[in-house]
Length: 135
Image 1 (cartoon, one colour):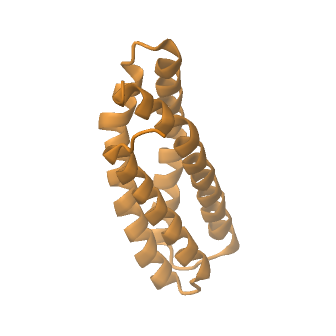
Image 2: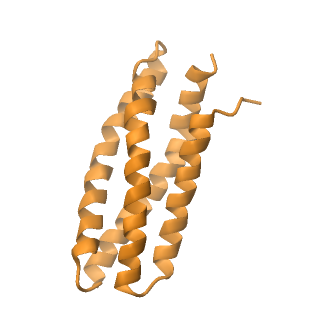
């Protein structure tokens, strides 16, 4: 059984918090309450991404194992469109006066992409990190 890595445990707990906020937003009908939850989501996500950018991706990209290096480079490169979409959608929600179908569709698309990314990170990226940090 692999050792538990405290850094990965922290990242996974942040994923859990992000997913919980998505569930809470999905139940809310009030735009102001959604804005408050989106503010919370932004705070957690920005700090989470910073940890990945400063610690996780450099460790993977710097690995002597070519396969792990490729994984790190791939994930590092593919997060940029997610980040851009995240910023655009959350800013649009925060500045919106009306929660219309178009904005909800953008939010749902973002939510679904992030949920999928979380699953992939936890099953591929974090496992790769643990292999280089336990050797």
